[in-house]
Length: 182
Image (cartoon, rainbow, N blue to C red; front, side, top):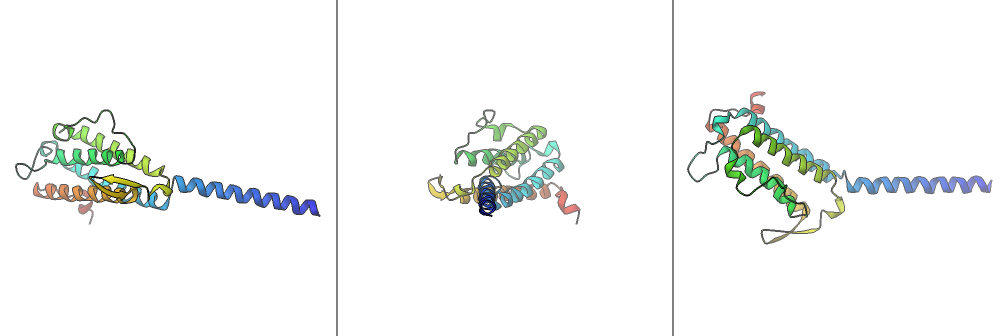
């Protein structure tokens, strides 16, 4: 009987260890914050990509006024920011991203490729994020903040430029594709 209790005790300890190890792994990769964040970023991504698809190539150099970003410049600004924000938490800019690309890349296909790549990179980073690092300090344009706050600013930035591109589209008689479904 004592052997039975001993083996039951070992089994329970082993089971608890496995559960704790799985919980620890979950904390590193698929935290609730990361899942929710990826979901929200993906919502912005889908709308930005559908707008890019709906806007004709000849409108990618359109701008509402002199001194204001063109359609292509807004898209490429989002691409650059999606990569740049991650440099503030230790990632590197891709080697292909060169200064000035936001003003020189105007080809719709290229822009869509870069946009998708920037979101894939962001999704991969967030999926592997250790939830325990969200309160780590970061500095952003001279402000002290946390990783969590930085990621929220990036999400806000995506939505800010989504709104800008919605306005640009409507100024050119283009209805955002998701609006047509209603």
